Image (cartoon, rainbow, N blue to C red; front, side, top):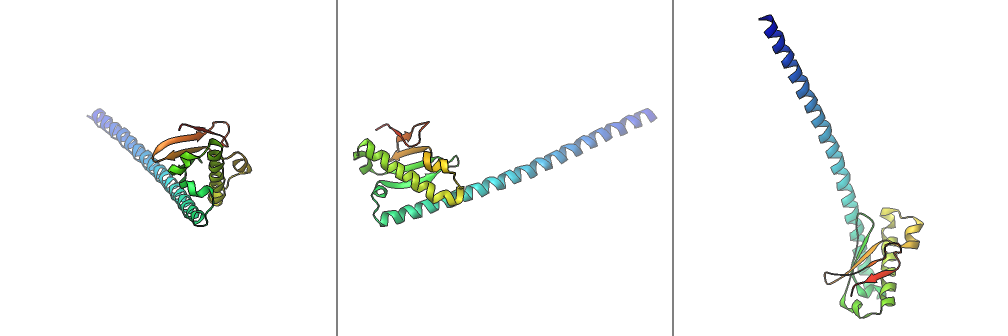
Length: 155
């Protein structure tokens, strides 16, 4: 009888310690997930502010009639420091060199505008950022992989 009681107590002890460690590890994981989620939310909020600032300043450029800005509908900076540029139909009528100049100016505008939030280094100013261009929801072109100042056009 004593042997059975000892076995039961040992099994209960093992079960209790296992469940305690599982609960403790679950609590640690939950705290880690909460910290990660908070960091991600903070980064998303910062990126949202960056893109709102870009939109507001681009609107100001439209009002002051800057040549390059009249071809740009919208600019977006992505999490991976890539730029999405949305252009209008008039952009399609331009020669390739004119397109490249406009996109380069839009890149520089984006870097200058978002430098306050992202703290870009000098290389970003000199080399530009990877850029994707869209027109009417269609993929129009992108910067070359090793040279963000030159572009490949698909239309």
